[in-house]
Length: 317
Image (tube, rainbow, N blue to C red):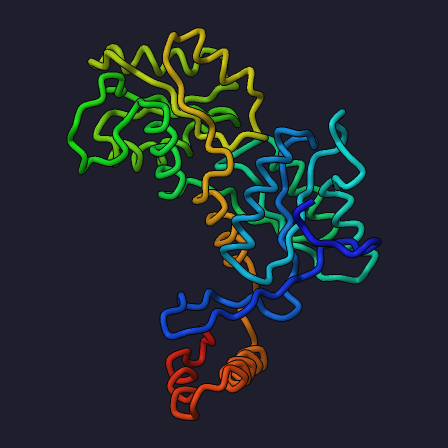
């Protein structure tokens, strides 16, 4: 496992990151408040080699984005590939309640509406755990889809590069799972993607029979000669056979799922941070004191420490 854990502890232990030194260090990211609840990535799949590799890489990105965050992965029950270290969402919530810990923030690993959310909200309500919105629609998802299309040779890496790609698509079907509601929500990301690609983009649901074929036909009827499929799918939430079947039935090339693309991890981190309660004045004062102590420990002159504290302001950022 990549998440550090103490044997018997219900959730991984917070591991604070070291403060970078030097005048050219990167700006500090917002600090996780002391005692903040853990982030549980709620995965709409059972544990297995494929889902595990994606979520562990995403959480690695989250920890890079936000030092000090406590993370864990919660799967659906069952699964032949599940190991002793794999925990379900229900198990993590029960363990937190038994230990008297704050309920973790559940971040569903889906880019939009999904049938999994009904079950997740019902489970969270039993324990009083907060559940964030899905990760999309969002411009970062449009970026990730664009990159996957370019990796498959179906789009230019960016519009500033005017060289032609013979296999570039002149129309894109943005495929997702979660029924018509998911397709409607994906349409917003599709508008953002169309602006990036300068080609028409329509959304379709992989789990609605005939939806993808109808979208492909619509593109062809409106002039597209080389339509392509672009999964707005992270991976674990969709059956891989749905993606393969859609490409086979339509005869269209397809990009890969988003997987552990960095912007997905960034979205998870920002979604979690937005769900945290606002820090109290006491927390802000404590953060300022810790920052001053850190500056003093680095041996900075008094004037430099004062300027550092003034630049951070009352927000502590």
